[in-house]
Length: 262
Image 1 (cartoon, rainbow, N blue to C red):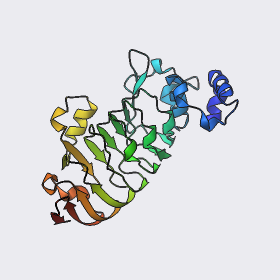
Image 2 (cartoon, rainbow, N blue to C red):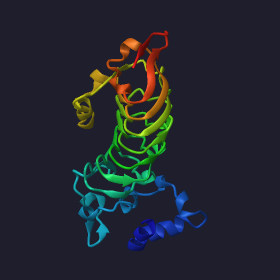
Image 3 (cartoon, rainbow, N blue to C red):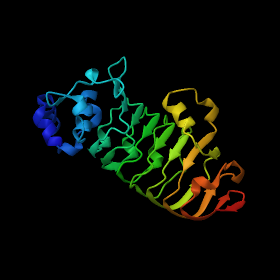
Image 4 (cartoon, rainbow, N blue to C red):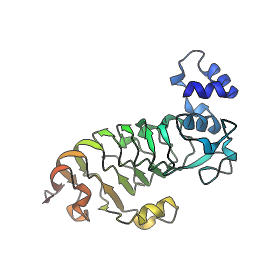
């Protein structure tokens, strides 16, 4: 798809010819590209994008529906909102615009690898749930601004290092994947809770004041291959053990040695 995109767009052909004089295409620095080109490359991997095209070519980001692709006053793409849009193909996260604050791609049919290192530094809400994404999730590399990350219902694997989660994080849903190894939340002194009706996620997404949740972390780990003890900071801060259900973990233990069976 990348080469098809290049064939259709003379600007891209010129840019890539210049950028690849001494290096292969895969080494192009995304930060050197305009948001228009990044969106063209990002959407170039999608199989369903006719709503964003005119005469077979992708529209300028300024001409796209702001409900789907929103551009701020400085001309930067800061929201990509395409939940349940029937999009298939490949998600290449390296092409995410650098000023992106919200991306919602839930309930599509996207393949590719989830890569936390590609999340823009300004991102506060990322929903990649209910797709076919693989890869691993390096939670040590999350943006310092992120408040909600939903990567549940995918095929992401590996272990999770949660020793350096950003203080801004309020929601972390990794359920229904193939993660393995231990669950260690000893560094998280916040209250661990659930968001049964999605109220908190809605408030974050809508940029409603979320200061009341600053000492709460909504988590879901169920339906994975986690094993061993679940390590938490303080057992009394765990509102519900259901967030750890349907794993191979047997009990929850805090830093003081208090424990509770799952």
